View (cartoon, rainbow, N blue to C red):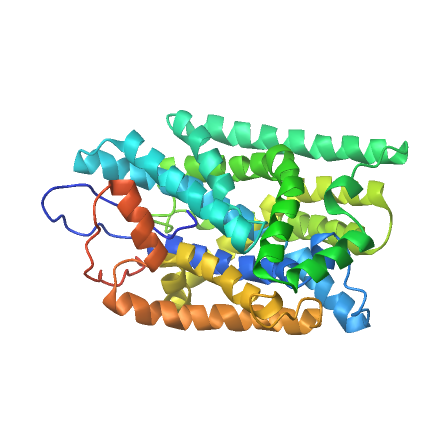
Length: 415
């Protein structure tokens, strides 16, 4: 789940802090890195938000950076986050059962808190927020939490196939002259207007975010929302099987995910990147989107499988990724705040003034600083600042302030 919390209890006496699964926190930290690499491009440019390349940066290196981000990052890491959201639901159900707490009221308060945080995030910082989407999808997960793992997987595959067919239909309509892509993405005039607004006053920035939200909601409802739900259902199925708690018996499955993900998923990512940047027209871009919907989950799974196999033999990697993953909600929101201070009128106003390479380098630097700061923060605190607030809303009581012991990854023979 995006907020970094895995387990929680509601007791009148002080309970022992439940053991965290370090592999889950590390996966979340890894996903957080991919998220900032993708999101910063849209925070740094009105043209990217409109689906266009920044006209001021057209050198071969600029295009290569865009290709790398599109092919290897876009639409992969939010799926990994969504998978972890679904997985964490099973942990929260178990925690509530073990503590004797009523799960449904607690989870509903949690979803309400996520929705309010997401709404504020979208209006003030980044209209591409995903927290509100998680809150809505969480209601569906709550309703189907008793679903069998196999049924959850079948439903996820069905949703993904339906979405892909939707893009194929849009591609057909574009070929017939009914191209609806501009109603969402806009064009060069829209991008230039957006740039001017984002460099202006606070009220203009908020007004621009609200303007974009009116279009993004369409994408959320009909496309990204169902894709998030599909990934959450896979996470729910994996959580019910407790597969991430002990990886030692799943080496063969992880290897198969790597082979399938890096071959089929990699090929699909190439088609998606080519359809995005080759100038092949709206119909081709829609077909690329359909291919990406079917193959991006495989590539995301390959990333996760590779990381899970590496973690037991690379404690330093675990130490880097786990702290930011434990307070991922704070870090996710902080990423948008930092980028807004760099690129909009909130701060330096550098929107569309930095090359794609510089923008991506800033993203890497942001995550590096967050990883170091998260480790320091967790030495004296049990939760991140926003996690603490969300936990208060969830449990309807003030959380304990004492720091928790650092989680350790169980030995695994998955490598």
